[in-house]
Length: 415
Ligand SMILES: Cc1cc2nc3c(=O)[nH]c(=O)nc-3n(C[C@H](O)[C@H](O)[C@H](O)COP(=O)(O)OP(=O)(O)OC[C@H]3O[C@@H](n4cnc5c(N)ncnc54)[C@H](O)[C@@H]3O)c2cc1C
Image (cartoon, rainbow, N blue to C red; front, side):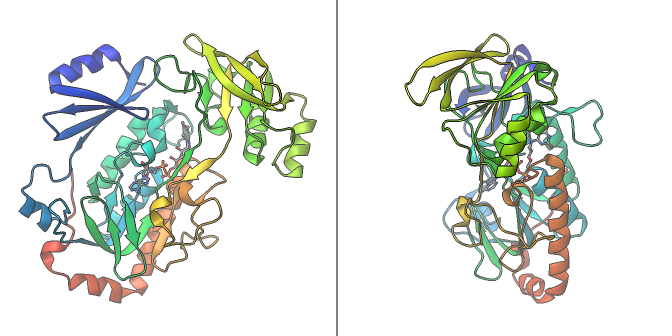
Protein backbone atom coordinates (compact mmCIF):
# COMPACT_ATOMS: atom_id res chain seq x y z
CA UNK A 1 0.00 0.00 0.00
CA UNK A 2 1.21 3.49 -0.66
CA UNK A 3 0.16 6.71 -2.22
CA UNK A 4 1.19 7.86 -5.68
CA UNK A 5 3.75 10.53 -6.46
CA UNK A 6 1.16 13.11 -7.61
CA UNK A 7 -0.50 12.87 -4.18
CA UNK A 8 2.89 13.43 -2.58
CA UNK A 9 3.41 16.50 -4.77
CA UNK A 10 -0.02 17.83 -3.82
CA UNK A 11 0.71 17.18 -0.16
CA UNK A 12 4.07 18.97 -0.44
CA UNK A 13 2.47 22.07 -1.95
CA UNK A 14 -0.30 22.07 0.69
CA UNK A 15 2.25 21.69 3.47
CA UNK A 16 4.64 24.39 2.32
CA UNK A 17 7.60 22.10 1.67
CA UNK A 18 10.66 24.24 0.95
CA UNK A 19 13.43 21.75 0.32
CA UNK A 20 13.91 18.03 -0.36
CA UNK A 21 17.00 16.03 0.50
CA UNK A 22 17.76 12.35 -0.09
CA UNK A 23 19.27 10.68 2.96
CA UNK A 24 20.06 7.01 2.45
CA UNK A 25 16.79 5.62 1.02
CA UNK A 26 14.64 8.23 2.62
CA UNK A 27 13.41 11.43 1.08
CA UNK A 28 13.50 14.20 3.64
CA UNK A 29 11.29 17.21 3.17
CA UNK A 30 12.08 20.40 4.99
CA UNK A 31 9.43 22.95 5.59
CA UNK A 32 8.89 26.07 7.68
CA UNK A 33 12.56 26.94 8.01
CA UNK A 34 14.27 24.18 9.96
CA UNK A 35 11.45 23.34 12.32
CA UNK A 36 9.89 20.30 10.75
CA UNK A 37 11.32 17.36 8.88
CA UNK A 38 9.27 14.77 7.10
CA UNK A 39 10.50 11.39 5.95
CA UNK A 40 9.06 9.71 2.90
CA UNK A 41 9.83 6.12 2.07
CA UNK A 42 9.92 5.33 -1.62
CA UNK A 43 8.25 2.14 -2.87
CA UNK A 44 7.13 0.93 -6.28
CA UNK A 45 6.01 4.11 -8.01
CA UNK A 46 4.48 5.26 -4.78
CA UNK A 47 5.44 6.48 -1.36
CA UNK A 48 4.69 4.39 1.66
CA UNK A 49 4.03 6.93 4.31
CA UNK A 50 4.75 10.28 5.80
CA UNK A 51 6.22 10.81 9.23
CA UNK A 52 6.57 14.35 10.49
CA UNK A 53 9.37 15.03 12.95
CA UNK A 54 9.33 18.23 14.92
CA UNK A 55 12.86 19.13 15.84
CA UNK A 56 12.94 18.53 19.60
CA UNK A 57 12.38 21.70 21.58
CA UNK A 58 12.41 23.79 18.39
CA UNK A 59 9.48 25.74 19.80
CA UNK A 60 11.19 26.37 23.16
CA UNK A 61 13.49 29.02 24.41
CA UNK A 62 16.92 27.79 25.62
CA UNK A 63 15.73 28.17 29.20
CA UNK A 64 12.68 26.00 28.58
CA UNK A 65 14.84 23.51 26.72
CA UNK A 66 17.23 23.21 29.64
CA UNK A 67 14.38 22.61 32.08
CA UNK A 68 13.31 19.71 29.85
CA UNK A 69 16.71 18.05 29.79
CA UNK A 70 17.85 19.70 26.58
CA UNK A 71 21.54 20.04 25.81
CA UNK A 72 20.83 22.73 23.21
CA UNK A 73 22.38 25.53 25.25
CA UNK A 74 25.07 23.35 26.80
CA UNK A 75 23.61 23.38 30.33
CA UNK A 76 21.76 20.12 30.58
CA UNK A 77 19.29 19.30 33.33
CA UNK A 78 18.65 15.59 32.92
CA UNK A 79 15.28 13.98 32.35
CA UNK A 80 14.60 11.24 34.87
CA UNK A 81 12.72 7.98 34.39
CA UNK A 82 12.55 4.50 35.89
CA UNK A 83 13.00 3.06 32.36
CA UNK A 84 14.61 4.32 29.19
CA UNK A 85 14.01 2.48 25.90
CA UNK A 86 16.57 2.97 23.13
CA UNK A 87 15.28 2.07 19.65
CA UNK A 88 11.88 2.22 18.01
CA UNK A 89 11.30 -0.96 16.02
CA UNK A 90 8.80 -3.66 17.03
CA UNK A 91 10.98 -4.59 20.04
CA UNK A 92 11.35 -1.04 21.39
CA UNK A 93 7.69 -0.12 20.98
CA UNK A 94 6.39 -3.37 22.46
CA UNK A 95 8.68 -2.82 25.45
CA UNK A 96 7.42 0.78 25.75
CA UNK A 97 3.76 -0.26 25.57
CA UNK A 98 4.19 -2.82 28.36
CA UNK A 99 6.34 -0.49 30.45
CA UNK A 100 3.96 2.45 30.07
CA UNK A 101 0.99 0.29 31.08
CA UNK A 102 3.01 -0.80 34.12
CA UNK A 103 3.33 2.89 35.12
CA UNK A 104 7.08 2.99 34.50
CA UNK A 105 6.84 6.34 32.67
CA UNK A 106 9.23 5.22 29.91
CA UNK A 107 11.23 7.63 27.81
CA UNK A 108 12.05 6.32 24.34
CA UNK A 109 14.84 7.51 22.06
CA UNK A 110 13.38 6.58 18.66
CA UNK A 111 16.46 7.64 16.68
CA UNK A 112 16.83 10.29 14.00
CA UNK A 113 17.78 8.19 10.98
CA UNK A 114 20.08 6.16 13.22
CA UNK A 115 22.18 3.91 10.96
CA UNK A 116 20.28 5.32 7.99
CA UNK A 117 16.98 3.77 9.18
CA UNK A 118 13.95 5.91 9.94
CA UNK A 119 12.32 5.84 13.34
CA UNK A 120 10.11 2.75 13.33
CA UNK A 121 12.93 0.47 12.28
CA UNK A 122 13.57 -1.95 9.47
CA UNK A 123 9.90 -2.48 8.61
CA UNK A 124 9.70 1.12 7.41
CA UNK A 125 12.00 0.08 4.55
CA UNK A 126 9.68 -2.60 3.19
CA UNK A 127 6.35 -2.66 1.39
CA UNK A 128 3.70 -5.11 2.61
CA UNK A 129 4.14 -7.21 5.73
CA UNK A 130 2.08 -10.37 5.32
CA UNK A 131 3.21 -12.45 8.28
CA UNK A 132 2.51 -10.18 11.24
CA UNK A 133 -0.44 -11.76 13.07
CA UNK A 134 -3.70 -9.82 13.11
CA UNK A 135 -3.50 -8.42 9.58
CA UNK A 136 -4.93 -11.10 7.27
CA UNK A 137 -4.82 -8.73 4.27
CA UNK A 138 -1.23 -7.66 5.05
CA UNK A 139 -0.24 -4.16 6.11
CA UNK A 140 2.42 -1.73 4.89
CA UNK A 141 5.51 -1.83 7.10
CA UNK A 142 5.31 1.91 7.59
CA UNK A 143 1.68 1.84 8.67
CA UNK A 144 2.30 -1.05 11.05
CA UNK A 145 5.10 0.88 12.77
CA UNK A 146 2.98 4.02 12.90
CA UNK A 147 0.38 2.02 14.81
CA UNK A 148 3.04 0.68 17.19
CA UNK A 149 4.15 4.27 17.83
CA UNK A 150 0.63 5.55 18.46
CA UNK A 151 0.00 2.72 20.91
CA UNK A 152 3.21 3.57 22.80
CA UNK A 153 2.09 7.18 23.08
CA UNK A 154 -1.51 6.37 24.00
CA UNK A 155 -0.22 4.56 27.07
CA UNK A 156 2.10 7.41 28.02
CA UNK A 157 5.54 6.84 26.50
CA UNK A 158 7.53 10.04 26.02
CA UNK A 159 9.24 9.79 22.65
CA UNK A 160 12.39 11.75 21.75
CA UNK A 161 13.22 11.79 18.03
CA UNK A 162 16.94 11.66 18.68
CA UNK A 163 19.76 9.16 18.29
CA UNK A 164 21.60 8.01 21.40
CA UNK A 165 25.28 8.83 20.97
CA UNK A 166 26.69 7.30 24.14
CA UNK A 167 25.68 5.71 27.44
CA UNK A 168 27.21 5.42 30.87
CA UNK A 169 26.10 2.09 32.30
CA UNK A 170 28.78 2.02 34.99
CA UNK A 171 27.17 4.70 37.16
CA UNK A 172 23.76 4.62 38.92
CA UNK A 173 21.35 5.83 37.72
CA UNK A 174 22.36 5.01 34.16
CA UNK A 175 23.06 7.96 31.86
CA UNK A 176 21.92 8.08 28.24
CA UNK A 177 23.12 10.89 26.00
CA UNK A 178 21.86 12.22 22.66
CA UNK A 179 23.09 15.47 21.15
CA UNK A 180 20.14 17.24 22.76
CA UNK A 181 19.19 15.43 25.96
CA UNK A 182 20.61 13.46 28.83
CA UNK A 183 18.34 10.94 30.50
CA UNK A 184 18.93 9.42 33.95
CA UNK A 185 17.29 6.01 34.18
CA UNK A 186 17.09 3.29 36.82
CA UNK A 187 16.86 0.66 34.08
CA UNK A 188 17.42 0.55 30.31
CA UNK A 189 16.11 -1.55 27.43
CA UNK A 190 18.27 -1.57 24.32
CA UNK A 191 16.32 -2.37 21.14
CA UNK A 192 18.39 -0.70 18.43
CA UNK A 193 18.08 -3.52 15.91
CA UNK A 194 20.48 -4.56 13.20
CA UNK A 195 20.93 -3.58 9.57
CA UNK A 196 21.16 -6.17 6.80
CA UNK A 197 24.33 -5.60 4.80
CA UNK A 198 23.57 -4.68 1.21
CA UNK A 199 25.75 -4.70 -1.86
CA UNK A 200 26.40 -1.59 -3.85
CA UNK A 201 26.38 -1.93 -7.66
CA UNK A 202 24.36 -0.33 -10.47
CA UNK A 203 20.72 -1.39 -10.06
CA UNK A 204 21.06 -2.45 -6.41
CA UNK A 205 19.52 0.67 -4.87
CA UNK A 206 15.96 1.84 -4.42
CA UNK A 207 16.15 5.07 -6.38
CA UNK A 208 15.73 5.56 -10.12
CA UNK A 209 16.91 2.44 -12.01
CA UNK A 210 17.30 0.42 -8.82
CA UNK A 211 15.57 -2.89 -8.03
CA UNK A 212 15.67 -2.91 -4.22
CA UNK A 213 12.27 -4.29 -3.16
CA UNK A 214 11.47 -4.80 -6.86
CA UNK A 215 13.24 -8.15 -7.06
CA UNK A 216 16.16 -7.48 -4.71
CA UNK A 217 15.76 -8.21 -1.01
CA UNK A 218 17.78 -9.12 2.06
CA UNK A 219 15.24 -11.40 3.76
CA UNK A 220 14.02 -14.62 2.14
CA UNK A 221 11.66 -15.51 5.00
CA UNK A 222 10.04 -12.06 4.72
CA UNK A 223 9.80 -11.75 0.95
CA UNK A 224 10.43 -15.20 -0.58
CA UNK A 225 6.76 -16.16 -0.84
CA UNK A 226 5.83 -13.01 -2.80
CA UNK A 227 4.19 -13.73 -6.18
CA UNK A 228 7.01 -11.96 -8.10
CA UNK A 229 9.43 -14.74 -7.10
CA UNK A 230 7.22 -17.78 -7.62
CA UNK A 231 8.33 -20.18 -10.35
CA UNK A 232 11.32 -17.96 -11.27
CA UNK A 233 15.07 -18.56 -11.00
CA UNK A 234 16.42 -16.77 -7.93
CA UNK A 235 19.97 -15.92 -6.87
CA UNK A 236 21.31 -15.75 -3.32
CA UNK A 237 24.63 -14.02 -2.57
CA UNK A 238 26.72 -15.36 0.31
CA UNK A 239 28.63 -18.35 1.59
CA UNK A 240 27.63 -18.73 5.24
CA UNK A 241 24.87 -20.61 7.06
CA UNK A 242 22.39 -17.78 6.45
CA UNK A 243 22.96 -17.88 2.69
CA UNK A 244 22.36 -21.63 2.57
CA UNK A 245 19.33 -21.40 4.85
CA UNK A 246 17.85 -18.71 2.59
CA UNK A 247 18.67 -20.77 -0.53
CA UNK A 248 17.00 -23.89 0.92
CA UNK A 249 13.96 -21.84 1.97
CA UNK A 250 13.65 -20.30 -1.50
CA UNK A 251 13.61 -23.72 -3.22
CA UNK A 252 9.95 -23.94 -2.08
CA UNK A 253 8.99 -21.15 -4.46
CA UNK A 254 11.72 -20.77 -7.09
CA UNK A 255 12.23 -22.82 -10.25
CA UNK A 256 15.98 -22.82 -9.50
CA UNK A 257 18.20 -21.23 -6.84
CA UNK A 258 21.72 -20.05 -7.66
CA UNK A 259 24.09 -19.53 -4.75
CA UNK A 260 26.67 -16.95 -5.80
CA UNK A 261 29.87 -17.01 -3.82
CA UNK A 262 33.09 -15.07 -4.32
CA UNK A 263 35.27 -18.04 -3.31
CA UNK A 264 35.30 -21.74 -4.15
CA UNK A 265 34.61 -22.95 -0.62
CA UNK A 266 31.82 -22.12 1.80
CA UNK A 267 32.00 -20.80 5.38
CA UNK A 268 28.73 -22.55 6.22
CA UNK A 269 28.58 -25.51 8.62
CA UNK A 270 29.09 -28.99 7.15
CA UNK A 271 25.49 -30.02 7.80
CA UNK A 272 24.12 -26.98 5.94
CA UNK A 273 26.52 -27.60 3.08
CA UNK A 274 25.38 -31.23 2.86
CA UNK A 275 21.71 -30.18 2.72
CA UNK A 276 22.38 -27.59 0.05
CA UNK A 277 24.57 -29.86 -2.10
CA UNK A 278 21.91 -32.58 -1.98
CA UNK A 279 19.11 -30.25 -3.08
CA UNK A 280 18.50 -30.68 -6.82
CA UNK A 281 17.17 -27.14 -7.20
CA UNK A 282 20.33 -25.46 -5.89
CA UNK A 283 23.26 -24.65 -8.17
CA UNK A 284 26.50 -23.05 -6.94
CA UNK A 285 28.19 -20.34 -8.99
CA UNK A 286 31.69 -20.23 -7.52
CA UNK A 287 34.26 -17.43 -7.70
CA UNK A 288 31.61 -14.97 -8.81
CA UNK A 289 30.32 -11.57 -7.74
CA UNK A 290 27.28 -9.59 -8.86
CA UNK A 291 28.26 -6.33 -10.55
CA UNK A 292 24.97 -5.07 -12.01
CA UNK A 293 21.20 -5.64 -11.98
CA UNK A 294 18.89 -5.03 -14.94
CA UNK A 295 15.17 -5.09 -15.65
CA UNK A 296 12.14 -2.95 -16.32
CA UNK A 297 9.64 -2.47 -13.54
CA UNK A 298 11.07 -5.61 -11.91
CA UNK A 299 14.48 -7.26 -11.79
CA UNK A 300 15.05 -9.54 -14.82
CA UNK A 301 18.81 -10.18 -15.06
CA UNK A 302 22.07 -9.74 -13.22
CA UNK A 303 25.64 -9.44 -14.46
CA UNK A 304 28.17 -11.72 -12.82
CA UNK A 305 31.92 -11.21 -12.85
CA UNK A 306 34.49 -13.91 -12.24
CA UNK A 307 36.85 -13.21 -9.33
CA UNK A 308 39.47 -15.32 -11.19
CA UNK A 309 39.68 -13.69 -14.63
CA UNK A 310 37.17 -10.76 -14.47
CA UNK A 311 35.06 -12.34 -17.26
CA UNK A 312 31.44 -11.14 -17.17
CA UNK A 313 28.21 -12.86 -18.14
CA UNK A 314 24.51 -12.25 -17.62
CA UNK A 315 22.15 -14.51 -15.70
CA UNK A 316 18.35 -14.40 -15.93
CA UNK A 317 16.77 -14.18 -12.49
CA UNK A 318 13.49 -13.00 -11.05
CA UNK A 319 14.98 -12.36 -7.62
CA UNK A 320 18.26 -11.59 -5.89
CA UNK A 321 18.71 -12.04 -2.14
CA UNK A 322 21.67 -10.63 -0.23
CA UNK A 323 22.68 -13.00 2.58
CA UNK A 324 25.98 -11.42 3.51
CA UNK A 325 25.29 -10.70 7.13
CA UNK A 326 23.86 -8.06 9.44
CA UNK A 327 25.43 -5.29 11.49
CA UNK A 328 23.90 -4.85 14.96
CA UNK A 329 23.48 -1.20 16.02
CA UNK A 330 25.74 -1.34 19.06
CA UNK A 331 28.61 1.05 18.19
CA UNK A 332 27.30 3.61 20.70
CA UNK A 333 27.70 1.11 23.56
CA UNK A 334 31.51 1.33 23.30
CA UNK A 335 32.57 -1.44 25.68
CA UNK A 336 29.79 -0.78 28.20
CA UNK A 337 28.17 -4.18 27.73
CA UNK A 338 29.30 -7.67 26.82
CA UNK A 339 28.96 -8.13 23.05
CA UNK A 340 29.81 -11.17 20.96
CA UNK A 341 32.49 -11.12 18.26
CA UNK A 342 29.99 -9.77 15.70
CA UNK A 343 28.77 -6.99 18.00
CA UNK A 344 25.46 -8.55 19.12
CA UNK A 345 24.47 -7.98 22.75
CA UNK A 346 24.84 -11.14 24.80
CA UNK A 347 21.84 -11.92 27.00
CA UNK A 348 21.37 -14.56 29.68
CA UNK A 349 19.62 -17.49 27.91
CA UNK A 350 15.86 -17.43 28.31
CA UNK A 351 15.85 -13.82 29.53
CA UNK A 352 16.68 -10.36 28.18
CA UNK A 353 19.18 -9.60 30.97
CA UNK A 354 22.53 -8.30 29.67
CA UNK A 355 25.91 -8.36 31.39
CA UNK A 356 24.96 -5.19 33.32
CA UNK A 357 22.36 -5.60 36.07
CA UNK A 358 19.29 -3.52 35.19
CA UNK A 359 20.07 -3.29 31.47
CA UNK A 360 18.01 -5.45 29.10
CA UNK A 361 18.19 -6.09 25.36
CA UNK A 362 15.44 -7.04 22.92
CA UNK A 363 14.95 -7.64 19.20
CA UNK A 364 17.48 -8.05 16.43
CA UNK A 365 20.26 -6.37 18.42
CA UNK A 366 20.51 -9.59 20.47
CA UNK A 367 19.06 -12.11 17.99
CA UNK A 368 20.91 -13.33 14.95
CA UNK A 369 18.72 -16.33 14.40
CA UNK A 370 15.03 -15.42 14.04
CA UNK A 371 15.13 -11.72 13.02
CA UNK A 372 11.38 -11.27 12.55
CA UNK A 373 9.06 -8.48 13.62
CA UNK A 374 6.97 -10.80 15.74
CA UNK A 375 9.99 -12.31 17.53
CA UNK A 376 11.39 -8.81 18.10
CA UNK A 377 8.03 -7.71 19.56
CA UNK A 378 7.94 -10.84 21.73
CA UNK A 379 11.37 -10.16 23.18
CA UNK A 380 10.39 -6.49 23.71
CA UNK A 381 7.54 -7.73 25.91
CA UNK A 382 10.00 -9.99 27.78
CA UNK A 383 12.40 -7.08 28.32
CA UNK A 384 9.66 -4.85 29.78
CA UNK A 385 8.54 -7.61 32.13
CA UNK A 386 12.14 -8.38 33.13
CA UNK A 387 12.74 -4.66 33.78
CA UNK A 388 9.54 -4.35 35.80
CA UNK A 389 10.50 -7.30 38.03
CA UNK A 390 14.02 -5.95 38.39
CA UNK A 391 12.73 -2.52 39.44
CA UNK A 392 10.42 -4.14 42.00
CA UNK A 393 13.39 -5.99 43.47
CA UNK A 394 15.58 -2.85 43.41
CA UNK A 395 13.23 -0.33 44.97
CA UNK A 396 16.22 1.68 46.21
CA UNK A 397 17.11 2.57 42.58
CA UNK A 398 13.66 4.05 42.03
CA UNK A 399 13.62 5.79 45.42
CA UNK A 400 16.96 7.42 44.58
CA UNK A 401 15.41 8.71 41.37
CA UNK A 402 12.43 10.11 43.24
CA UNK A 403 14.75 12.30 45.33
CA UNK A 404 15.69 14.15 42.12
CA UNK A 405 13.61 17.37 41.94
CA UNK A 406 10.12 17.13 40.49
CA UNK A 407 10.89 19.47 37.58
CA UNK A 408 13.25 16.87 36.15
CA UNK A 409 10.85 13.93 36.37
CA UNK A 410 9.57 12.61 33.06
CA UNK A 411 6.00 13.71 32.40
CA UNK A 412 4.16 11.10 30.37
CA UNK A 413 2.71 12.14 27.06
CA UNK A 414 -0.51 11.10 25.43
CA UNK A 415 -2.06 11.70 22.05
C1 LIG B 1 13.48 -5.09 3.87
C2 LIG B 1 13.03 -5.86 5.10
C3 LIG B 1 11.82 -6.51 5.08
C4 LIG B 1 11.38 -7.20 6.21
N1 LIG B 1 10.16 -7.82 6.18
C5 LIG B 1 9.72 -8.47 7.26
C6 LIG B 1 8.44 -9.11 7.26
O1 LIG B 1 7.73 -9.09 6.25
N2 LIG B 1 8.05 -9.74 8.40
C7 LIG B 1 8.83 -9.78 9.53
O2 LIG B 1 8.40 -10.35 10.53
N3 LIG B 1 10.04 -9.21 9.55
C8 LIG B 1 10.51 -8.56 8.46
N4 LIG B 1 11.75 -7.98 8.46
C9 LIG B 1 12.57 -8.11 9.67
C10 LIG B 1 12.09 -7.12 10.73
O3 LIG B 1 11.97 -5.85 10.15
C11 LIG B 1 13.06 -7.07 11.89
O4 LIG B 1 13.25 -8.38 12.41
C12 LIG B 1 12.49 -6.20 13.01
O5 LIG B 1 12.20 -4.91 12.52
C13 LIG B 1 13.50 -6.07 14.15
O6 LIG B 1 12.95 -5.21 15.08
P1 LIG B 1 13.82 -4.46 16.19
O7 LIG B 1 12.85 -3.74 17.02
O8 LIG B 1 14.74 -5.41 16.83
O9 LIG B 1 14.77 -3.45 15.42
P2 LIG B 1 14.63 -2.48 14.16
O10 LIG B 1 13.39 -2.71 13.39
O11 LIG B 1 15.93 -2.61 13.45
O12 LIG B 1 14.52 -1.03 14.82
C14 LIG B 1 15.54 -0.48 15.56
C15 LIG B 1 15.35 1.02 15.60
O13 LIG B 1 16.27 1.59 16.53
C16 LIG B 1 16.85 2.75 15.96
N5 LIG B 1 18.18 2.98 16.52
C17 LIG B 1 19.34 2.37 16.20
N6 LIG B 1 20.36 2.89 16.89
C18 LIG B 1 19.82 3.87 17.67
C19 LIG B 1 20.37 4.80 18.61
N7 LIG B 1 21.68 4.82 18.88
N8 LIG B 1 19.53 5.68 19.21
C20 LIG B 1 18.19 5.65 18.96
N9 LIG B 1 17.64 4.79 18.08
C21 LIG B 1 18.43 3.92 17.44
C22 LIG B 1 16.94 2.42 14.46
O14 LIG B 1 17.04 3.59 13.69
C23 LIG B 1 15.62 1.71 14.25
O15 LIG B 1 14.62 2.64 13.97
C24 LIG B 1 12.21 -7.27 7.37
C25 LIG B 1 13.43 -6.60 7.39
C26 LIG B 1 13.84 -5.91 6.27
C27 LIG B 1 15.17 -5.19 6.28
